[in-house]
Image 1 (tube, rainbow, N blue to C red):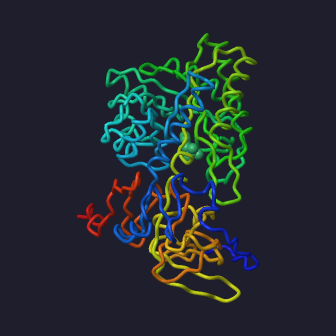
Image 2: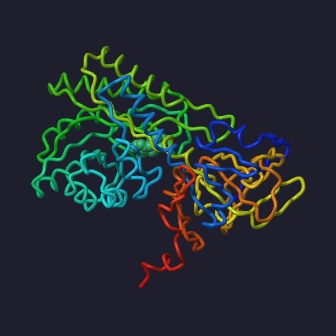
Image 3: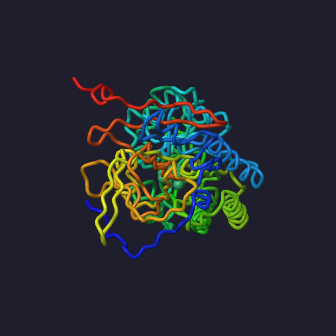
Length: 451
Ligand SMILES: Cc1ncc(COP(=O)(O)O)c(C=O)c1O
């Protein structure tokens, strides 16, 4: 794997940190020449805690969760926000989600275990996954989770068997692939027909399976679920999916006399990773989806259901940044300038995986314009290991602290120990104070499972 060819005609944008707008965590500010987040000096923090380091603006996460809740509740009172923990999870994040009155989406046993250990109420946990193991299903049912989102008929049989054995009745949703093409990267598109997820609508398969779910002992069908993909800017794709789902609900009502109580429409809005990105706001997302819901319900003659959304990225991505220290500089005239940092694809795989775009600044030169185009390379043994490809940066020097914005989602949760790299610590900052909520891994952690 190597990097895409450099665009050597690209011009630096000469923007200063505060001109990066929507890419920044809410509390980002520049004092003197240093970047501050949550009232904490990022340069001091990097020196105290070491780098690479994940830093989250706690208040920003809280206010995004609240914005989601209020945006939906004011438009459709019967609604619920479920934070998708795959975007970023640790125990403190689960506590924060509970404090903000949101529910939690977990995929598999590991995320469920973290949530339960944090004391998250089981009845507000939604369990996802296209291949939950029988053991994971048993753990979820035994814990008393609120909903299991059924992904297939095979899983239906497993849930039914386990629930009966444990003497439970498990509330479930059916995950439907609505056949809607969302305009996003191939790897994070999930609602189109060629998908490993959910019950397909082709040849009325999903509709025909409803009968099996209704007949299965130990299982109670309370709603439908769909998720068309992530990092979506075009809101009409959500409206299209909602109409497909409401139509299916209407057919279920007509055939079985069953009015399903819940409709879960999956993940939230996309976010601005680059200065030029113009995603919809949470309010616009809520407006379009609730309008679509109420309109479709009217058109198809169904009572408006309890509406659930599962945002992940838009709750934590912008609130989170990663700090690195510059260790090596290498300029290849006419080709590329490499700035190598003390992390890379082990703490952020998204750039290597889908050439994700990020904005970065030198935190100790945050008042200066970004006059250079550089590639922020990682320290790993892959040519494709980079965090930022041909991005703008202030003139870099050895020892500078670089802050990469927008790394709060799908970075820590997709991190690895490649090359024996211990995972970075996670720090929450708020009101001028920093607290470590996940400690940095040690070399010993790398061997802890070895015999
Ligand atoms: C089932 C499901 N729900 C919610 C999400 C969260 O999506 P997002 O992070 O785009 O809000 C995902 C992520 O892909 C998902 O797979």
